[in-house]
Length: 313
Image 1: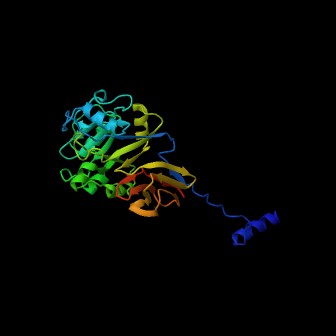
Image 2: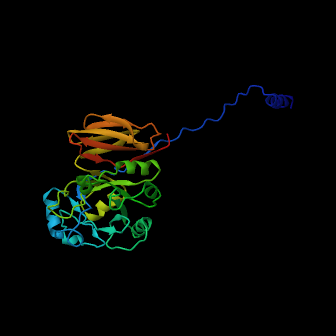
Image 3: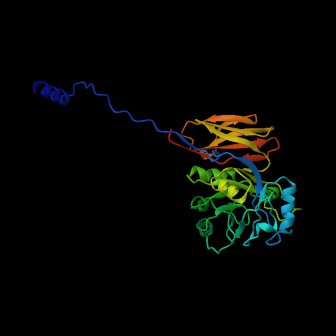
C-alpha cells in the first residue's frame, strides 16, 4: 500500500512518468485514380448536330464521316430531340444516346438519355438528367449567347461534366476554352469531369473533328463506354493525345504521343510540375487537393486528363 501511495502521490506532484504519450497514427494518403480499371482507348464525340436538330446533314452522313476519320463511337446531340443511334451507328461505331437539352439560359448535354424534359433553371435541367440516370454536361459554358456566371456554376449540384473545350467557339474566338472555370469548380470541392466536343453542324463545318473525348474502356460496346464515362475514365482533347495515365504508390505518371509536353496541375490551377518531354511523373505530397495532367503539342493543341483527387497525407 505504501508503494502504491507513493506512486499516486508522485504522479500528482508532477514527477516524471515512464508512460509514453499515445502517438497519432499517420493519415493514409489516398489517390482516386479514374483510370485504374485499364482497358483500350476509344476516341469519340458527343457534341454534334444533325438535321434532326440545328444541323445540315443526315445522321447517317455524320456517322460515315466520323467512322472514316478514326472515331470509335459517336453521340449525335440534337436540340431537345433524341436521334436514334441506329440512324448513324454500327458495330464499328457504336452510337451513344445523347440529347442536347437546350434552354434559353444554357445547353446541357444529356449523355445516356433518350428524351428531353423542360426546366426553368440550369439546376433544374441538371437535376432531371441526373435523376433519369444520365450524365449532365454543361456545354459551352462561356458561350457569349448564354454566358454562365461563376457564382451560378459554383453553386450547381449533381453536375457530372463541364465542356472545357468547344471547337466551334474556339474557331470563332469567343469562349472556347473553359479550363480556368473547371479549375475553379475543382478547387471549390466539386468533382466534375472535363469534356470536349466539336459542336459542329455538319460534315462541312470547319469545327468538325476539332475536339473529342477518348474513353478507356474494356470493350467498344455502348454499355462499356457509358460505364467508363460514368467513373471518369476518359480524357478530353483538342488535338493532343495521352497514351497512358497510371498511379503507382504516390506517383502519377503520364505519357502522351511524341511531340507533346506535360503539365501537372493542382488546386487553384497551380502548376505543380512541367515536363518538356511526352512522358513524366509527379510524386504526390498530399496537400494538392487534386492533380490533373495536360498534354500540350507544339501547335498549342491540348489534352486534359481527369482529376486524380487527393485525400489524407
